[in-house]
Length: 242
Image 1: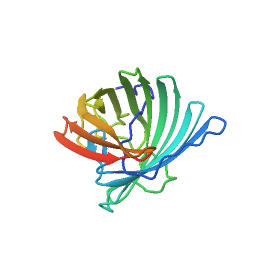
Image 2: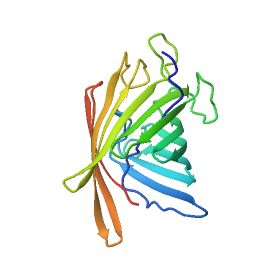
Image 3: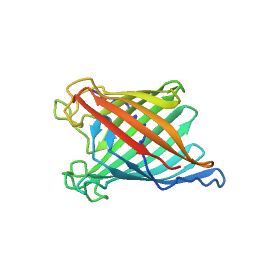
Image 4: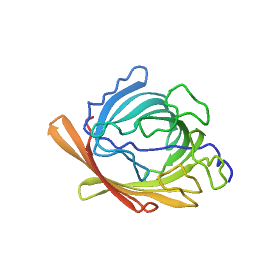
């Protein structure tokens, strides 16, 4: 199949108990710093590790943003460590972004040197995403275009892609979000090789603000995620300080 344009990633990063997030407005520049804790690192219907700290550092200006995000296991020191760098632009409901995923740890079979970008050695994975939020429904398409991608049935770079639709709603006093994600064509990038179109992420998340003081509240969330392709089900919970 053809390299379906070079489009890619929108991901909501679920998080939890953290160092407070703050923003600074200077000439319309906004900066954020945050550290979250989650009960498990579930991404696109895959279990990538147990209890983890997830720090975030970002800056945004006039629709452009640059963000660093990480995942570090605290229950299992052998969990794979991850650092993601994202460059994005958003205007209205439209957004486009490029992400550099970088992994290290005992299970990583590639060269863990950060500045090694050779195609068949690097532990980097580069993905682009285009997305549009219609308020009632958000759609996104992501494609890996460089780095440690999977291969297709012919043994060639798969340009592994992922498409997702998500819809927010309010029910029973809680804020909910339903998401459905699929891989459109063959790739061995994911936990279980995909031979054709496959749904890998069907999730439902609920969130509620827990008021601690009149001016300080903590969002509590729970997420149920099913992966029809691998026939697995995950349940996670977390807290977020803002």
